[in-house]
Image 1 (cartoon, rainbow, N blue to C red):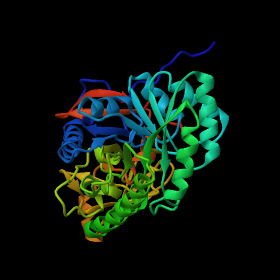
Image 2 (image 1 turned 180 degrees about the vertical axis):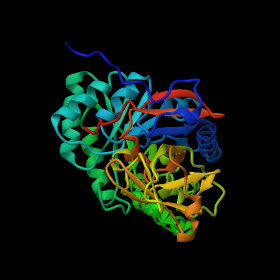
Image 3 (image 1 turned 30 degrees about the vertical axis):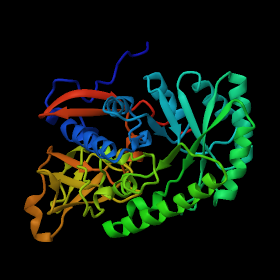
Length: 382
């Protein structure tokens, strides 16, 4: 006879935060709110629209909070990723990526019957496929031509190539040119503030040169979109971007936390992995219950967080499948190791793929669980 048994939730609203089962993603709601409001205020002050990137969180509740404070919509990186956001009522979604294949074009065109949908192109065949899918669905798609401004990934090289694609877009009644995408992901993680400022200036200069040549040819780009959490303060003042796409600012992972922020636009760490010390038998180290299946380590190992700052005495030194090894930074600091059963909070190295490992985010305020938000776009990478 089948056994009926449901896994108890890791957390419920109203319970003390220190009783959340581990490993769990925990969001400090007060800090999160400050980050959201700080970014929106900066964009409003600069007269630039904010379109936060949802690939960082994959959570409709977060997107709705951003839109409620003034964001014009969101970005998604994959077509399927947009589905739960459309279901949640997000009315303007930009797929900040190119797509290929009839299945994706068809899904995009179907979504465009329920929300304003835009997508990037860098090839004429993409335009034709999008037009055919939109026509078949009875919908209309907005299109951004992506320009390679130094990322050396997607995008066309310059204005002549852009103009050819603009002409191709204009030939289809089911498509509309919305503007340009000019994004340089590589500069987001340059550690020095001055280095990021200089790299962002070069990116803006390249983008501005393309815009000028297009305007000389009679083509006006109503929207120029790009930028990220590491370059946003420079992008806002560039005079080039009409909207910006930062995502990680809501959380500030350890990788972004390693950047130098000499300017005035700073964000705080709000996202943590709650873990528990599961073994102290070795004596010179402790073992946490969170390893590779609980966090992404492509951008480095997590920080240990204590008393509002990264620990100066303890390091997370190795991640196994289900175990995390913590050692004192200096051999003589063994006494600083946490006890068996202790709660240890980690700042993940890279928030985006870490979120993709969890079904939910536990929102905490004042030491109490306030909300449990589904990571509804988890695993949607088609």
